Every structure is written in C-alpha cells, then in structure tokens.
Image (cartoon, rainbow, N blue to C red; front, side, top):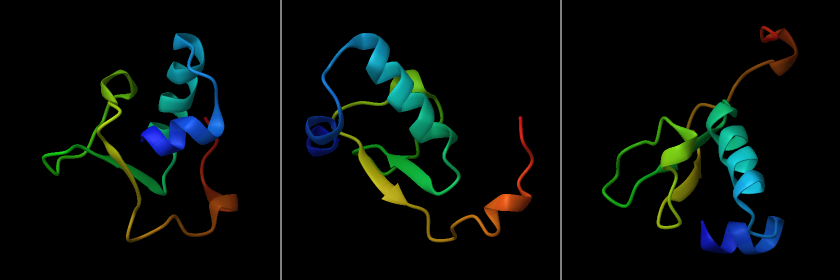
Length: 67
C-alpha cells in the first residue's frame, strides 16, 4: 500500500477516502490484511494491507449492471 500511495496521490483524508472506496468497489481487486483476511470496508484499509488482483477477474464488463 505504501508504494501505491506514493505513486498515485498526495496524502489528504478526502482523497484517500475516494481511492479506498474505488479499490473496494473494483470487482477485480482484493485488499488483503497482514493476517490474510479480506477488507470489505473502505474506511478500514490500512497502509500495511496488500492490493491483489482477484484470481477470477470480471468477465465482459460491458454487461455489468450500472448503479
């Protein structure tokens, strides 16, 4: 997470909330805790977590429902 943060944005609380929400909503990403669990809420993401591509990525994103 630290390397990711360093590359994409400057640390402001509002911006980090937006980035975390986007990561949680992305169907192809998982946020893994240091103990191996999966984060489910954006406000719980920690700098010690790992961003991982899911083993089964979304298929045909053009057919996904829009919210």
